[in-house]
Image 1 (cartoon, helix red, strand yellow):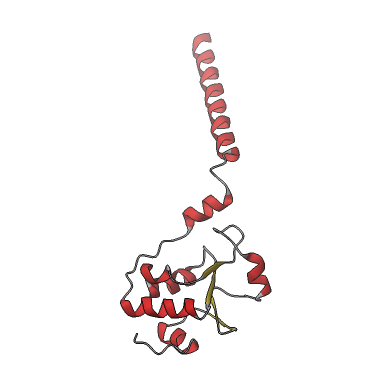
Image 2 (spheres, rainbow, N blue to C red):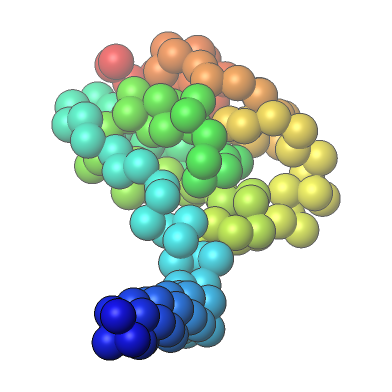
Length: 145
């Protein structure tokens, strides 16, 4: 009887120590920063770009257009999906959430970005998820879509 009670007590104590050890490793691990968590949470663009979408993205980069986003925003992800993974590499995407990767929160505040996504094209803000045709019109793009 004493052996069972001692064994049970030791098991409980071992489980408690193991729980505390793993909790402190999680809490104090340098690999588990908020940025790393955000980076893992950001969805990946999976659609494939056409030559036309890449050309539009290059045009937007050339004229200094910016896409203000937040890593957690589903509308931002959908906007990027419209362009496709190859074209998105050419866009200037600005992360506005301080927990995101390479955030530029002060720039977002300075530009008075209030909604995600927001395009800045030729000095004017266009909040919302827009069609590629609308973005082409905002930017005076004359190529094919």
